[in-house]
Image 1 (cartoon, rainbow, N blue to C red):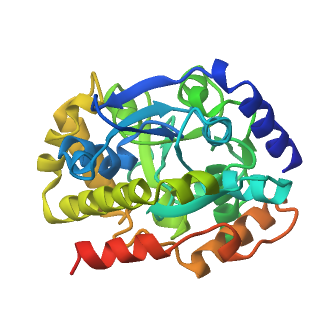
Image 2: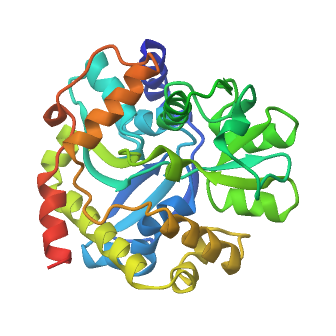
Length: 332
């Protein structure tokens, strides 16, 4: 965990040189800068809120940048190059434990389970069982990151011994798998579907469906930013909560039609399939206020991975009042 903290601090010190690719910008006016851990249909409501004009309704535009990993996302928040970070809450937890004069606080949870899908080199779509992973090598994410720790925790609970490869950067996992590394690889949508459609591998299981609920991807910002910009924090949560409601109330094809401009080169059919995959596993929070029991389960998972120096109190890292207020307004 100390290595993770040092990596975040080092990245923050050099944040101006972190390569961030522009994912979307609605343009003009007051802008809220959001650095996302990766760009995926898993976060569809966040982009949908932009497409439907929900951010504009709150008086600001959004600018998304891709951090390519939770370390870089947290570094962007700490350095001030991003107003809001969107990644696994473990990044903020590590910073809190490491000590900070302006600790990032988690103020909203969008996803409630792992959004990756397990891809196999061989066609096991009709025969796959998790016991198939016994003794196999799997690319499942960065050591100390929630994806890898959740996967490891799941295997422990199932009594399966497998080798998790932590050596490949998150952004290069798919390329490494295609290049011959490991027997299985976890991929987010639409990458998993497109990989299978290209005949390169086979989607055999949903990791999140097997692992269960966990506070997986959250919004966080420096305490100072939250205190100075309460309207933006509330506006962001209201816009995304409205977008989740839209996803629930509309079919996947309708949702996908609003996402095409956020995923250049991805067909509407592929996006529709990806959205439906996430709807099928109940991926998104309707109420973005994190539950304390979920936070404690997260700490159990991190502790099990040997990455938790000490446990922290829920209220020292997580804010819920605004998200709860927004939920009650939107669903009233």
